[in-house]
Length: 570
Image 1 (cartoon, rainbow, N blue to C red):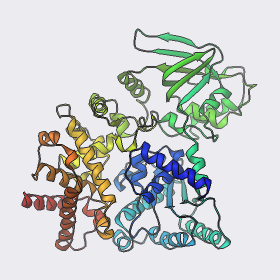
Image 2 (image 1 turned 30 degrees about the vertical axis):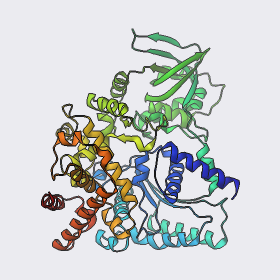
Image 3 (image 1 turned 120 degrees about the vertical axis):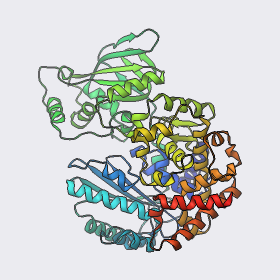
Image 4 (image 1 turned 90 degrees about the vertical axis):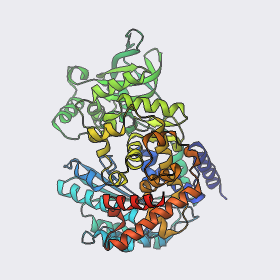
């Protein structure tokens, strides 16, 4: 075995250990590869897991990721809530990850055959389900709708193909290259006007991506010693001006791209050629007698563990919470000339109190469109759940990727959205709602307050998250491809049934779920839950001819049908 493959194998084992995962060898390669090739998007681990659609009837596609301006829509309903315009950017990322020693033409052949079928707008859901598995079809339907909406609005579509293998290097012949060209031609014909991209990744490329670690500690050099000020015992702040070239350097990662992760607590998107940004651009590109910071808004940064040496401030866990438009404009339009003496005003707030940080984030984003989960992240109940999870050895990601960026195991990190879905499905017996309208659980005030209630024992939230996670782990090990595909859209139904089996009753109470020992959830209980749900699916389809797996998971009628099955058992 070559050096690259030996080293990459060790990196994959380290990745598995660091994240405390139990996946098979081929699954680990897939997760590892997807994590590396999506690194620039700074995805949460569960986003990567949810993109995986491989198994039987996968059309040669291992992962299908749809992003609308860096937001990942989970359902068609979510797309309806999104605003599409000329500045909208849609990415449809189709990946193949094979722990094989070479790049094979057959993998491209499958895509050449599948792509025209999946993205043929005249094919309806039921027609696609004859040929492809439910997980792939559901993702494809979302991708198709995002594509249509973006095209009508005049936005930009990018179709990105990735093929990852365990080969030493990328070695391909003329026939392989010709088939890649054929695939790109088909994609160009299907997605008129779209940008088509294709990339091969061998051990060499994956190793290079793995080694491009995110830098946790950053340094910012002010023009002069920054003003240092404190407010009682609540934290300290630094205020000063930073040369435009230096600030651009601060924003740049090792590949020369802007550090997207610095803006996770702000709006994720640069607004493009809106009037205000055009004016900022003009100010940057046309030096005048006035300093830049006299004419433009400053930057607000929150950070931790400062070290000021001379005029250079080194800080950890950097988040730019105000000044995204100014930051992007400087990054995109400044020529990095050190002769340009102009500067931008920067405030750095150092505070370890999470409640204070939440207030800063909330106030600086009060006029900005942010995700529902981020809007709720500063609530007291979310902070208290985070504290409870931490005391139990788990991590509750109120701020996206906060714990991932600290290197915590992916298997122990849970987010607000996934927590809400688990509780709604298991405690309130609404798995169909969590599948059809997941973001409504956070957006709708009455639903949100019902799910997240300080009168509930916080162990309930952890129990629901753990059972849902274990269901996904057990589902992955199902060897019968037909049953596995049947259940792929019913994991939250499985979690609900598994909790009922643990409690030995069809409708366990909030108190009972809060006191259960979910470590008793084992393979035997999962197999029982699997048989109950799969049996209910089969019986429901017999009673309701024409019903398909995707829609069944989203309707109350099937949930009620499953409840009757459960009640007859206990």
